[in-house]
Image (cartoon, rainbow, N blue to C red; front, side):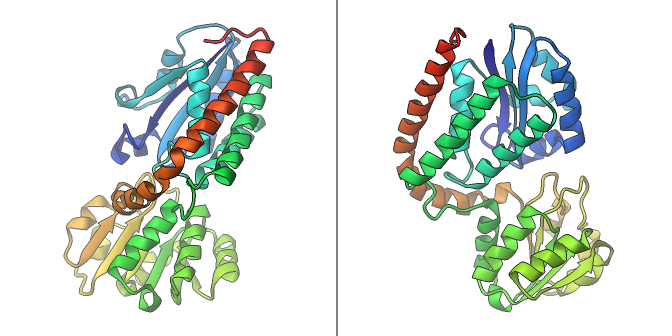
Length: 333
């Protein structure tokens, strides 16, 4: 049995390409069900975030798994950017991802919860066997150990916090009119960090009224407005955070024409929720996920001092997993 991983991430693949590789839950389920029906695959998992798309497999015997993935990915550019890991190299990569050393923001906590969600979804699709059960739980234990015994996530920024920090460079958040598009997990994180910056004027525009009102009730005394009223609120906003799963832009350049006062647009979504050509318009600054690199890199440098110890823990957990694997009479690859 052989472990196998193919991956694209922010290091090798620009956001414009990654947005074409987003797999929603129904597509992931279709793929995992096809894996379940393939006798050559015993375990399968997909990790898809705004910064990475990764396929993990345990193969009963070698076959052309790359072609199997390529047949599913509709975008031809996938092959140009993908990296491949096999055997214990795949386990090492997974452990590095779980530990946060492969993240755009070194030591971030979000990837840990995203990996747990990917594991739960694969369980739902019945593509987790004994090998991945052990592998993933080893990764979870490692992630906790790294965050407990190193400083890799000391003061670590999430994408949402980096976005708020970027907004704060351009506006006094305590006096700004803030518009948030979306009511999901990224929107929740944005609100949390806005409150820490003393934001007082927050409006959430979203499809899901219940989710938006729960966010407001939990975090602040802002306002909710339905998504179809977005254009009403845009002219009055100083800062806009877009954080939805929409497959097309919700804020168009046309909706921002004749802007008089400055506006900061921060798009946390992949694919983009804000039309990219808006950045060329007068009085408007537009930042996307790739634009957050400047703040992220500053904080990453501070946290890189924890990487050597994190890698020691990764190696230790990898040896433990490899020993367990050998005891099963599974040849190391």
